[in-house]
Image (tube, rainbow, N blue to C red; front, side, top):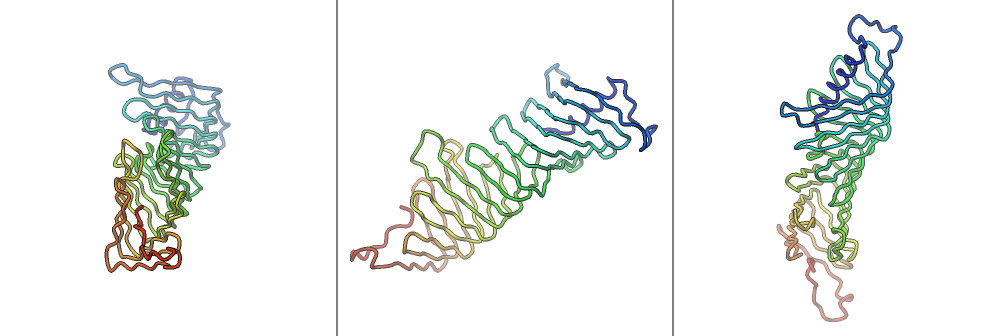
Length: 285
């Protein structure tokens, strides 16, 4: 999603309406206002590439303030951007969005919501220090603070991360897994990859199995939307009932659901809970 087009489109709106918005204005000039606007953009082949809609635009010397921002972008990166209020800095082209901010990636269905969002035109990044929520077919991720490209394919949540991964609808054989970490957490949707850092805790809902580590890397399967592989490093601990395993590193293979503990693994188990059989059940089963 190219938000530069949003800036360009609004400038065209001003020109089409015959509104003067240049250095001749003074900071004390009365605000000029446009009631409702709609503008479409096309490429050289005549294909529609974007459209911008809004209820109102207030123009001053330094800023353009708009209400009910609704922009659509087409082509390779189809996306929609909505916000109750937006302010465009006419000097640097940066955008501040506020109240009910929603970015939706149409090709994957990923949606990010927050209360405040800033777009830096030169860096092509959106950032916020506010709470954020990202919903996609793999589950839901929440946290505090965000740095991302506007299409959400590469994003970082800064702290207080919580991710809930659910099996695809209609397939009950998958596990619901909740992962929390102090952060940051980074994800690359194109590679179906995510990495959690600092005090990582993963809990499997159906079994109660818990996994602790300093860093967790996850690869998702594109077809099944399940965890394909996970690598945990640093102070790894797996808890299953009264049984606990420790290691420097752990590898989880989704196909076999087996855990491989590496680096002086240590296993502690409660023989009383096995009712005399003395067998330690495999952690991956």
